[in-house]
Length: 249
Image 1 (cartoon, rainbow, N blue to C red):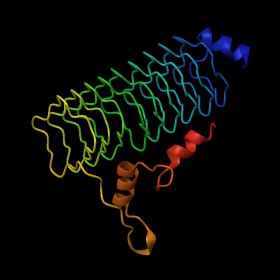
Image 2 (image 1 turned 60 degrees about the horizontal axis):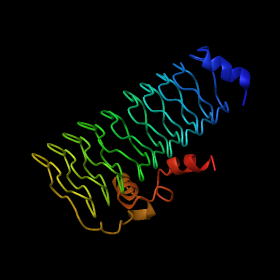
Image 3 (image 1 turned 90 degrees about the vertical axis):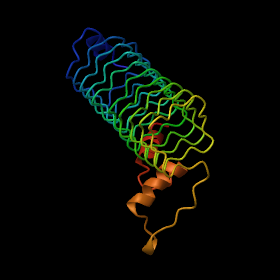
Image 4 (image 1 turned 180 degrees about the vertical axis):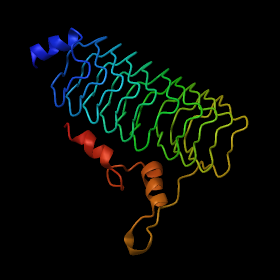
């Protein structure tokens, strides 16, 4: 680790800096100012960024596995393809952030305001979203298999074709949500608020095997169903997030 670089960051001299491919793993960078910094391909594994200001920063992609970002400001940041496996993201500001194809496996997002966040292609296996605010958010095709959503606010959310296989939805507010064609196989629905929700086509059974179109190619709709309902991101079309996650191993 570059001690001179580390000291510059701690002294508030890194706002807007080019830190591409920097090795800051394990560093204590709590409450530092990294506004607009370029951290693309940076190794931030296990780093402490609690309360840090990363507004508008480029972290696409970066390794933040096991990092502590509690209370950090990531508004407007590019987080696409970033590895947040096992990271602490409680009460993080993600307003306007891009989380497409982000790895959030085992991450803690409990109590976080996630309204309007784009989770397209993100990995959410065993993610803790307990008490999170996802009201009014477009979550079509997102896979919430095995995710803890206890007490979360999903009121008015677009949940069409979402998979909640084995998810904990205890006490979740789904009032006014669009759940058409959602999969709820094995989900905990105790004390769920479904007032005004659209439940047309909701399934509690295993989905049927997916068939390929002519010439052996999947239609875009079938491909999305494959990724979301079957959860096989590694072998399905669009499995880029898994490739990005494995590049750090």
